Picture (cartoon, helix red, strand yellow):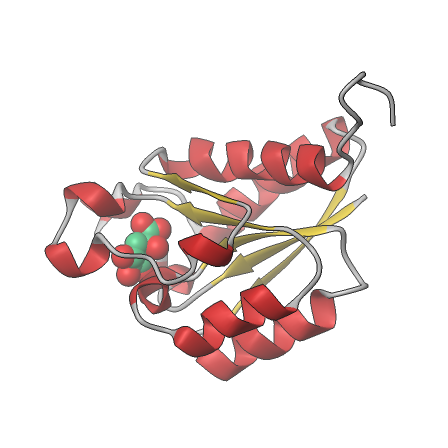
Length: 151
Ligand code: DQA
């Protein structure tokens, strides 16, 4: 089981960027935590960050068929990128949307996600724990068992 962790714009600055919203952990520290959890779950993560819409779209296209699911923090693109939304809708693998901060408790423009309707689900406001929960969800959804609990 392989999961792509996809980080959008400005998330390369985590650790020093507005820690009151995004916490003190760097992107490398978050990726390391995800890597550790993935191993415990018998899975593997590949991590990618881009500040560019096209880079994220290209990576999503490449992920289809290469990984089993995606954990995606689209950053500010969440709120207005129809191109990214279409890319999420186009791929056949489940995409779990995650935000470190609670987007519904912040400025009005952050309250709307154009990604959410095409995502498998969304986690918002739980900091790094949210990424870890999103990884658990991605692994569970990708390996989903039938109603009787068997594969
Ligand atoms: C974010 C929330 C977005 O509104 C913001 O533009 C980000 C980070 C989050 O993780 O809380 O860049 O996606």
